[in-house]
Length: 290
Image (spheres, rainbow, N blue to C red):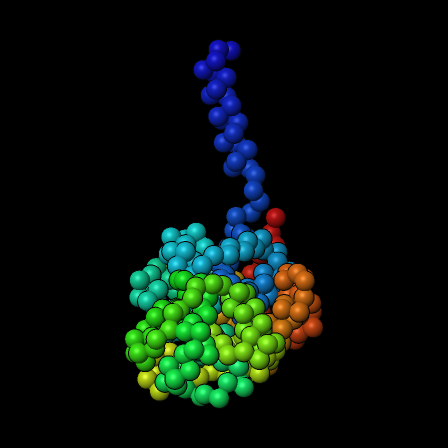
C-alpha cells in the first residue's frame, strides 16, 4: 500500500469515526446564559429537568451580544433571559428575524438605579445633589448589558455628573455589600428579580423620565426553527413560569449553594409539583430512543 492509499484510508476511517461517534445529536441542546442571577438560576433548572428526560444539555456562558449573535447563527438553541421591551430591545431589533419568542417566564421585571435604603433620596433626579457622597460613580455590570445601555441614556437625560463604571454582576453586588457593611453611599445598576433585594435593604430610585421603562417581561427566545425541530423542549421552555416567591426561591438556592448545578437539582426536587406542571402532557416517545 503506497502513502497516498494509506492517507486515503485514514481519511475514510476518520470520517466513519466522526459519523458514528458523538451520541444522538437530536437530543443535544445548547442553552445560552449570561451572568445575571435569574438567568443562571432558570437555565440550570432547565438543564436539570431536560437531562432527566434524556437530553444532553450544554450550557454556554457569554455576554449578551455574543449570545444573540450565536442564537441568530444557530450555534445556540435557546436563551431564557431576554428582557423586553426595553433592556434587550436593540438586540431584538438587530437579530429578531432569526429568532423565535416562545414564552414569558416572568412579567414583573424592572431595571434601574439602586441605592441602600438608608440613603435619603428617592429619585434619580436627586443624585447630582449628592455627587460627592457617591464619589461621582455609578457601579455597573457588563459593558454589553441592556441595563448599561439604558444607564448610558439616563446620564444625559438627567444631566448626571457621574461616571458609569463597567464591572460584572458579581463585582457589582460585592461593591454594594461592602458599602452597606460600612454604611457608605453607593449607587449601582440593579434589577428585580434579584436575590440582592432579599439579602440587602435596598431600593430602586424613581425614574420620572421613564428612561428605564415600566415593568418588563423575561422572555424565552430560541433560534429560528427550533420549535419544529425540538417540539418537546420548546413546549417545556414555553411552559416555564415563575411567581415572585418562586423566582426568589430558586435564585436564593443557587446563591447560597456552592455548586450551581447541584443547587438547581436540589431546588427541582423540592419543587417537583411546579416543575411537573411545566412538562408537556404527552411526551415525545422518541426522546429516550437509542
